[in-house]
Length: 247
Image (cartoon, rainbow, N blue to C red):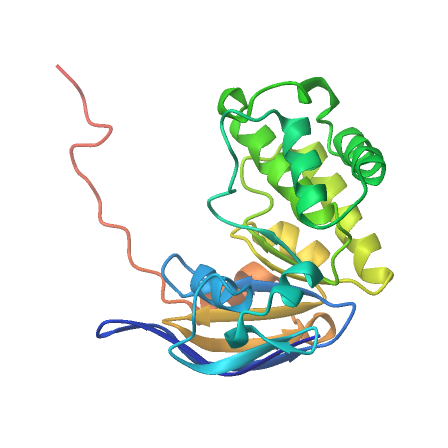
């Protein structure tokens, strides 16, 4: 369902993503991990057509992302880091608008929107303008927008950030059900415990390159232990003044 070949992105003299390659079959839940600045969001943006690769290519649902074909947009759902919400639209209006963009009949969009609002515990905020929503409500609204058209692939940038534990569990169950029915999930997150429970495939990137690529059955020990083996952990400088007696 996803195939990357030497995918590269440069910003001037800086190489953010450096020739990564991998294949992801249908029904996978892939955790794409790494420290800040490792190239995670840049990779996701290239695979969703938001950013043109400097070289290399990715195929998603049988289509090249470099071609920026509108047909590909209808096959994928994207939760971007920026969320992409309009402050002057309500939560419910965002779902109605998204349904229309993807060609859903209004009745279908309303029905699916109502179900998503209920499952994601957003019913109480359906009439709230996005500009007045909490961070968690905004994240859940954007996630619902990514799902409403039933895409073949979900690309999710930090879906658990600002989400309460109960809703995080619900999202995990939704994604597991989606993958079991043939959907494919590609997500980034820094919450290693959630990824360890959810993902079937793990790709750790560092410095724009793949440091490790493995499936669930190949994980020995904890994901956190492996992560810190692969990622250089800087020593913590002692700040002598922090916590000392104050006058």
